[in-house]
Image (cartoon, rainbow, N blue to C red; front, side, top):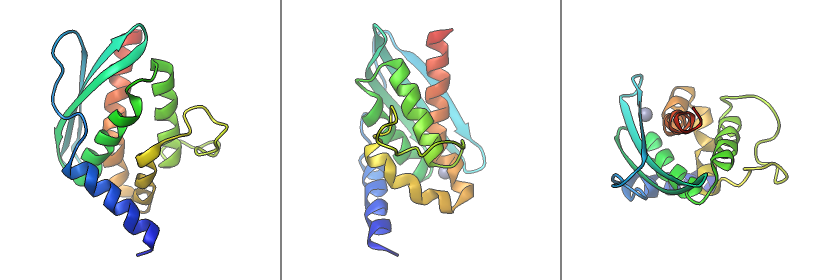
Length: 150
Ligand code: ZN
């Protein structure tokens, strides 16, 4: 295992063991839930949106370290962003994971290119069966955002 792989592994385990923003929101919020039956992962997301900006998020779920860490990292990145920016970050993540094909996701010129800790999930690409685990929180986020736009 390279030292970069080891660093990534530590970042993932840290989010898994100490998930950020775990819980639920009181007051007005949007709620969405997702499942990844192939692994047994469950994920739910509460978002508070004020004037087009995600001002708070809370997550709950159970499952493997990849799915839960991805959700924790996601909330770290999306809080404070506009809905459009959150969609850009989602697109970047899906490019990075090879779920969608296209331009270099981490090109610094790209909107939404800064993924922070999420870059640690790149290694998951080597294990195609786990990509769905990493993607679960993002599918759930997209569902939540679609509900706002509708
Ligand atoms: Zn999983």
